Length: 277
Ligand code: C2E
Ligand code: CA
Ligand code: CA
Ligand code: CA
Image (cartoon, rainbow, N blue to C red; front, top):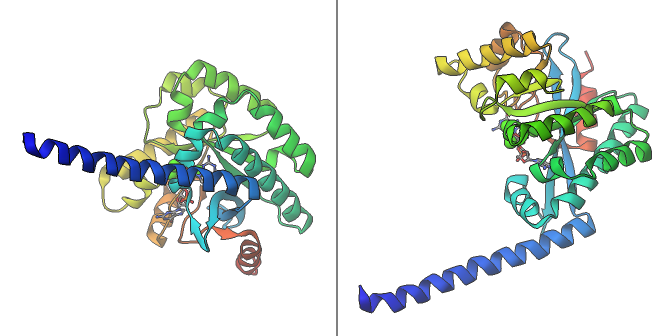
């Protein structure tokens, strides 16, 4: 073991250097991408189970890097760590509100949801950024929905309640994302100014396969009802999942069963086609 020690150490540091270098490289490419706006929002339709109509869309960020698309799971954590998420999130807000307005002008009236990370949610300037984006775009505040994960709001819940109250007073809708995967305190939930639970994909995918997931989905929908909140299920991939959610009284759905997230122009075409009959 002793003779191997030096070698191992060498490999270890080479490894470390390689990954540290990759990280630094990624950070500078990301910084440039944020500055150059090599980012694009894709939109996934949200459908009402009651009317079968498209009532909204979730904006999902993509990074166009070297001719390929990089998904948010591969760069949001780094953006969050380095603080780049603040200018990036600001751009997302501006871009999404501009899109809301453009679609409205084209007769497409949708509520567009954007995702907020932990650091954005705690940023004291968030309210200002939102007001600015709404003013600049002329988008009505109630067409914008903010999705914040359960774990982010439950972390120092008192402060979160205050921030949520401020956001809601601007007229926005608030959705608790990935609901059911964290540890929500029911006492807080009751007092949080929120509008909707977004049921996590992991539960939807197990519908019809695991009784526990069905029980959880039904419990979430009941809880939402009794608190006067709406429900949206994400990751709906099959007709039977859609039918199950419809019977269970879920309000809204989104997922590959309807459409993947699409660039805005493709979304408009998909929307026209879907709304034809
Ligand atoms: P999320 O908010 O839970 O978003 C749902 C993810 O599920 C998206 O992945 C979406 O493309 C994917 N999805 C939608 N329908 C289906 C389906 O039927 N089946 C399957 N298997 N997947 C489906 P995506 O776009 O890769 O986003 C990953 C995460 O990145 C999001 O999770 C969200 O937390 C985060 N994110 C995306 N855009 C932004 C953003 O602008 N800002 C911040 N802070 N985070 C973002
Ligand atoms: Ca989301
Ligand atoms: Ca999710
Ligand atoms: Ca998520």
